[in-house]
Length: 157
Image (tube, rainbow, N blue to C red; front, side):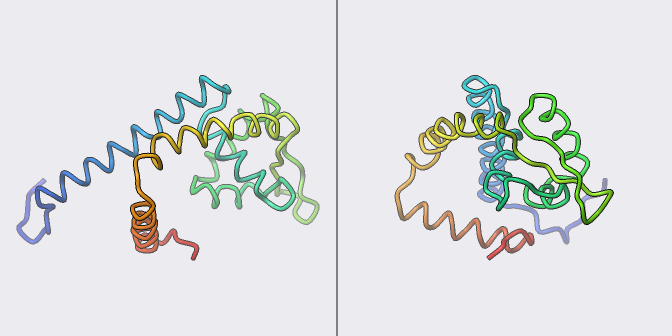
């Protein structure tokens, strides 16, 4: 690939920050996943699905809405739901308004699993992230993340 001079390449500080950001993201998610797997048998994706479902109005969502909430492809959600169904964490229900559509709902087993996992997850997030930051830094990062998410079109407010 030819390198052109009209590309605004990252300077050394920007490159260092970008690599730190990418490394932190990967390491943080891997650490949280390992800890959750060891403590509860749930993966981070399991936890994310259960968290979204348990925070929804009826403990259920259409697969397309679940995919949008998770920022996942619909096919990824469908495949993951199949794996979670086999473990009785979620179930599918037909959608009366749409014969082809389906709801995913959290089961009693799934509800118990997230209730067991949530305290450890919160402790890990607090230890790995928030205990290392001041209140002002948390506020600053919140503003920065919101601005960046708005820029890529993900912010909801």
